[in-house]
Structure formats: structure tokens, C-alpha cells
Image 1 (cartoon, rainbow, N blue to C red):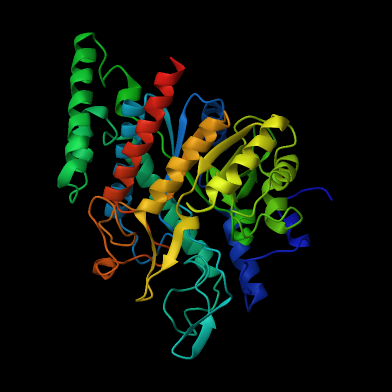
Image 2: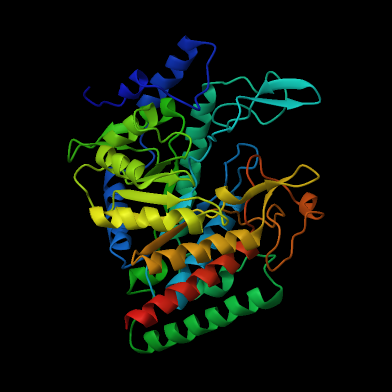
Length: 451
């Protein structure tokens, strides 16, 4: 069957809402198809070039952002704080780790979430599960939980505003390296972590002063005053992705213009299912989440389907096995894949395999397990002579208490202090920066070893 943006509808599909009114759904889709693209094909090709560099071991991918974006929590300040956190992490990895960093946010489209069950029960009342604001509402009421296609229009409009602000931040002065001291988030003022970042900022300032004395400054060097933050989200709601898929006027190729990069999750990567069919036809770089039961043969089949020409920069395999399983499962996979010489960027998602529920019914993640899986990923990749090329995190610039542990020492008892996620627990800025310093140390060791 020849691929087109609607061909996914001929395949088995999982994790999709059932809309009561098909005419209303089609009306919303017709409206979306007429709206301008959110990103442009040329930007997508630029990202693919940068991911090619990461695949070849010359840079590092930092992908992070909200678990699920929210209509109610949408604000310029939240977007700014996420942007600043990405800048902080990237500068730690670049300056301390000695490698360029490709920055991709889980933002401007991360509205849909897969769920383990179609229904949720509270106090004997059963309702459809919350699947993200692009599909239904978080409130536990019958009306809120009803899938509404108009939400796709609202998600598009919010994504447009978010992208406008991100582009302004990227080019309007906030990303200038001379402002590195001002990137610090308001609550990051305590302990060794703040001191480490302050020391790093001081080193960068001294380097910039030296460069300026040599005639290199923000006025004459664009890279010192601007940056690029690409966008990504899980390509889960295919009605939405279909509508934002456009034919590039320069190449004639189809691009999903809802984001620069898309990924599909552990639950929707069936080789003969709709999600794999859809992403096999778009020219965007794509990510595939691989859990503890994934195999090398499954990854190879996905590569054959999605990247038959073995294009470098196209495929990002995102490992999400859990701290207790990665040591047993990943080495064999890497060993078998290495024989096939596939162009794969390997990155680690240390969040999803380490999710637990506390005695008081909070879904959380232990920071030491997150650290453990990241360390194991680097160690295993080094042992198998494979480049550990990136990290994928659910995190926020807000001072939340959703993952236990870390420098701020969140406990199960203090989770309730600022537990604000609508879906999965996120790292706060302290925890994200602590993790960035750990990764930078690993990158630094690798650079020293290669010299």
C-alpha cells in the first residue's frame, strides 16, 4: 500500500480516543489542514544534520521538557523557565563536557499521553482515563473526560504562541552567553549545586572576556548571542499529526510540521500498526522508545521500515529499561545491532522505567535510580564501543516536588508540597542540573580517553 498522510487509518491502532461525533471531528481536521505549519521543512533538515553529528559521536543530544503540556498552566514565565533550564544544562554539557549540544524541547505539542488503562476509577466511580489536554480534560467528571476534537485546535494555537516565544528567546538576547549569570532560576540559590553552576559561569565569563580582547564578541559572532531550540513531541494522536503533515515545496517530500522531531512510544511501536506506518512516511527525524522487553530484531525491523536507506540523523533509539534491568538487557541488544552497522543515535530515557507508587498513592521516581540508569547506559555503551549520544528527560523549570531524592532531598512525605504534574513525575531544575553535571563528567572522561 502506498503511503500518504491518511494511510495510517488502514492499520490497527492503539491509544486513540473514540470521538462521539465524526462530523465534528472531520470539521476540526479540515480546519487544521488549512492552518499554517508550526515548523518548516528547512528547520527539520537542519536538525537532521545536527543529529547526524550526534550519531557520529561529534555532539550530544539533550531532549527534555514537560511530561504533558497543559492548557491551564500555560504561561510565558513557565516557557521562559523551561528555556533557561535547557540553556543551563546545555552550557554545562558543552563547557564541562567539551561537546556541542543539540537542544530539543518536549514542548509546543506534547499534549497527548498513552495510558496503561482505558478507564480510571476513584471512589467506585469509573470514567475514561485522562489522555492529555489535546484529547480530554484532567478533571474527574464525565463531561471533562469526553474526547473533544476542538481541543486539537486549542493545542495548535497554544503551540503557535509557545513557538513564537521560544524563537524570541533564542534570538532576542536571552541566549547570549554573556547573560549566563542571569540564566539561574529564582529558586536555585542553595547548596553545592548553585556553587558549581556559579563557578562554571565565572569560567565562561573569563573565557568570553579573553575572546572579546581578541576581537570576538556578541556583536560580530552570532553563535555567542543566539541559539536554536528545536521542538518535539510524541506522535500519538494521529488525527492531529495527519493534519499538520505537509508537502515541502522545495523537495516534494512530506514533513510533519507539528514539530521538528517526533517519537513513538513503547506501547505504539508495533511494526504493523498505525503509528509505525505514519512515521515511516515523514521525513522528520524520529525517535523510538525501547523498553526492557525490546529486542535487537525488533529494532532492526523498525529501522528497515522507517529508515530503509540507513540515513544518518534519521533514527534515534531511546532506551527506557529501568535501573534494575538495563544491565541485563542492553548489552546484548547493542552487540547484535553493532554487527548490522545501522545509523542509529542511542539516547537514554531514565524516567519511564523507574516509576513507582508510594504508600500514600503518589506516582514518583527515585532520583538515585534515575542517576543509576544514566550511569549504566554510559558504562554499557563504552563497554560495547557504542556512542552514548543523548538523554531524554521529563523535567520542568518549576520548583516542583515530584521525584524523590536529589540535592534538595525530596522525600515521600514532602512530595505533596508541590506535586503539580497532570500525568508523570518530573525532575525539578535542581535535579535536572545535578544530572547534567553527572553527564558532563562522563563526557569529559570520554574526551580525555580519546585524546
